[in-house]
Length: 139
Image 1 (cartoon, rainbow, N blue to C red):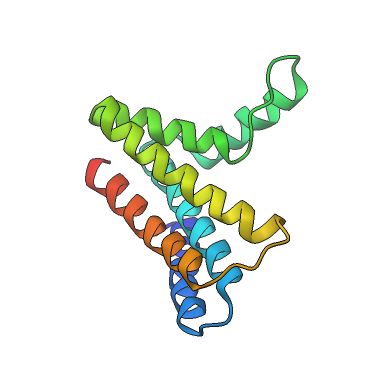
Image 2: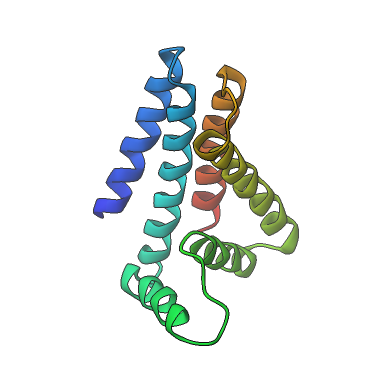
């Protein structure tokens, strides 16, 4: 098992524990997002789009005049492209919406001056589990 896959599983477990503590909701959202994101990167590596290739593409884009690839959006785009190859545009669209909903919860949790409660934390945790399940069922 890759280290990133292991980190993904640990973060998903941590998200659940933090959610169950009924106080660490923002941290739970953070772990839900990163567990899912790490899963996406490890799945890409598993199908031959290596960690090194992704990192190299991102680094190269930063050195060129072209649009800079975002370290989170690029792997998400790659996994969505792979899903579309294996499924259809509707499935890709559904997965995309879930990923970006989870990403929005993480941005609210990490960067905005708002209280994150149980409902948001629980939704983020469930989204991360759904996303992992959807990707696993196709790739």
